[in-house]
Length: 235
Image 1: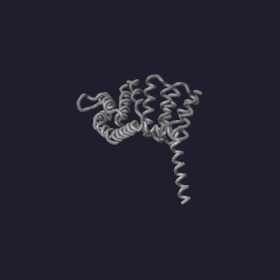
Image 2 (image 1 turned 180 degrees about the vertical axis):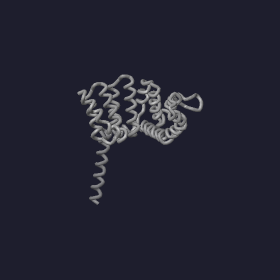
Image 3 (image 1 turned 90 degrees about the vertical axis):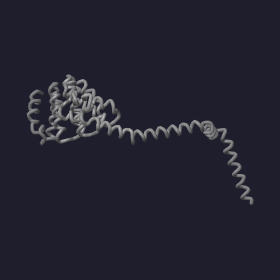
Image 4 (image 1 turned 90 degrees about the horizontal axis):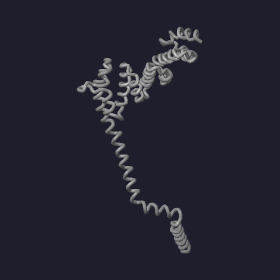
């Protein structure tokens, strides 16, 4: 009996501690939740709405939008494959939708992103180099080949614009984007020749030696000695 009475006394004291603490930090917390209960309900509901919209966008809206973009770009891709770059870019106002229209109409999709690449390459072939830089700059990819080709094409556009430092930078980015026995030595050679053109012979030599060391059996590797001889003669 005495033990039970003691336990009851302890419980009362603990309750009193909690009640008295409400005037302090814990009390402030209790008061906050009581006062802001309605607001927190609104916030919680808002979070659920945002999450619901995000799920809809990424699970339904974007995939459907990308499928529609792919269907629209089919004929433009055929025109591009046939080197009909003007048609690929602008379409014909009827059955062929151009890459410029597709990129604008289906923004945020993978197809719209790829349309920027096609548009950039089309402008490069049409000798509209500023536009080539603009649209290639909008394109992004982690694909090891396509990403490297993009940088190489940017290098070509900058070279045609007479911006050789930018051209060299992009050729080097193309070479370092991914290691590939076919493309990498080609990009290294482009960077080396651009440096040679700028009379930056030591930089050209380093790039040529990289081809010789790492890609000796490539087409560029088999011809690299003649380029090295020319650069060494200029040093």
